[in-house]
Length: 143
Image (cartoon, rainbow, N blue to C red):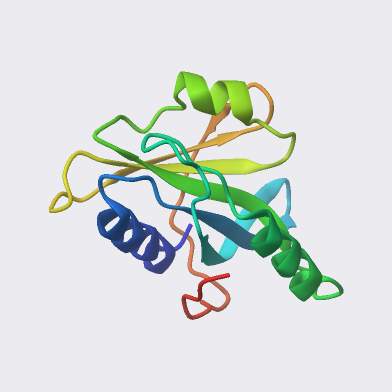
């Protein structure tokens, strides 16, 4: 995941603190790996302060936008304000879709730099989150 995209997620996590931010990750799959090309912030529809629910309408809009482009939704992200960068019990109960990557930005306070981790699949297998340059970085937009 390019540093520019991590910085965008970090800014969203700080702005949403003490709530969780969330969004979708656009990218391509190549050679058994996913390359993140853009992140798309979405509204957090969860009424709980320590949970996230991605706006389903935003998810559908992005799916339509990506149709025929060779790009796809490769994952989602959310923040853990005051928590660690590992999937919470709630994350494990409500998430984990095969081939979808979860990026978690843990933020201890809004002035701190978040730590990041990535997980994949139903078992939340930990992934390496390498910094590769993006082919292009889309401007942040709210879906």
